[in-house]
Image (cartoon, each protein chain N blue to C red):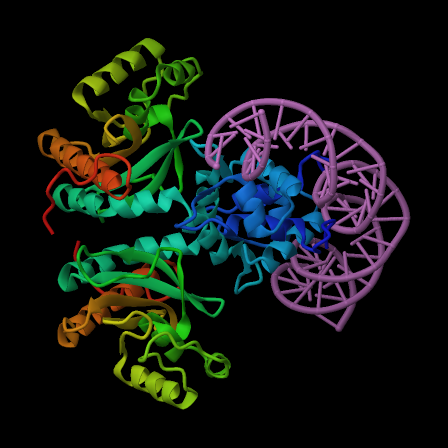
Length: 263
Length: 263
DNA sequence: ATATTCCTCCCATTGAATGGGAGGGGCACG
DNA sequence: CGTGCCCCTCCCATTCAATGGGAGGAATAT
């Protein structure tokens, strides 16, 4: 597939390079990058120069390289993520205003939970989610909701794997997990204590597209002892319903504006 | 630079392909894509298959292709845009709540104004800005603010060009533009009527990084007749100041938290 | 003064990129 | 039901860009 001795294609190497940057490592020298991604320096150098040419990478003030704004532009302009995020944002604000805890929006991507928006609350619970960050599907309330409403084959697939146990509360045993998912479907929400971070409870509800298919999860993260399910779950469900409605009304197909709407 | 007869490198072709998608054209058949980007069908097909492999593109329900979530993830994870957006969002909400008009955050990129966040208001003025969309620097209030606080050489460069006239209010004449910019610097904000969309006024203020350098513009878009500069400008300036402070306090360098902060 | 680490460029080798063309499937129109 | 049209996919001989070890040089640390 490529000239490279490692057998990687040019494109896969480009992706590897872009993938090497994250929020903790947002800038690197070319040499460091080369070591990190395991591509020979001369080749890394050449690829980086090309990426700089296309402005997918930028030079840093200290001579390092970082992701370019152009890359963000390309990725965001025609992306469904951007649309979903923008539609959901006002409803997330509502939840955030009422519940006053970290609020996130996430979806399933390649068997992980990918967070596409996050509203943080100062001084509240520890929040390990990051925008464009991922968490394992079985170890966060959002993941469990998304899994609970996934097709059975996918559920079986996930349950059949060896699941990592992060805390004493992480449910990894298939039968227990199945019961947990059934409970989530019955209640319409997930509320799980510290399955990835101790002393933190995640509460999540599904966001439906056109009434049936689940496309996202809406979640809040609260410190132990501050859970108030009676207030939180209705807030989340109301917002999730609002997002569903807004998703439908912005597209021609699907029940449009059958519902009256205040300004 | 490449095997292609057109002389384009592989990477530049990949960028061209990704660039072909935008919010209006978020899904295309491979043939349509091939025609649009001017790359022979067989080559486009091969590149698309590779991009699908890397999940930078996704298959649509109707067989077309669209941008993949993975691309958004790669671009957003280590991007400064994501940080800036997240830091600025609460302050934008404040403005939005008070002014109740479209509110945007933008920055200068390659001689254009690139919008990185937008809060919309239903039923308010026409809003042609799009998240990850661009506008010419001389034809929007945000652009004029960003230009007013740019280095003189860059200003001269922009003023030396042939500037497009979009409406009767668009200022394209260098001397007039210079006066406009001087006024913006003096007042600390830009307020310009319908220079790209008629019957719409843009009001924008600069967002500073570490007190001196301007990194973004904060803007609201109001319909003619509803301008209330006395209320709007202070709201914008307050929010812009808050963003500057939050930018500084999240980074070790720069005056951190000299200012008391309420929860 | 010496070692280390970085960036950059060179260039002979090699095999991946190229794209015209053919085959096949699906849909609409007459 | 046939015909035309458009799309996707694969093939394959040709061609030239990708590869990466190595060297030179600059900058910084020891």
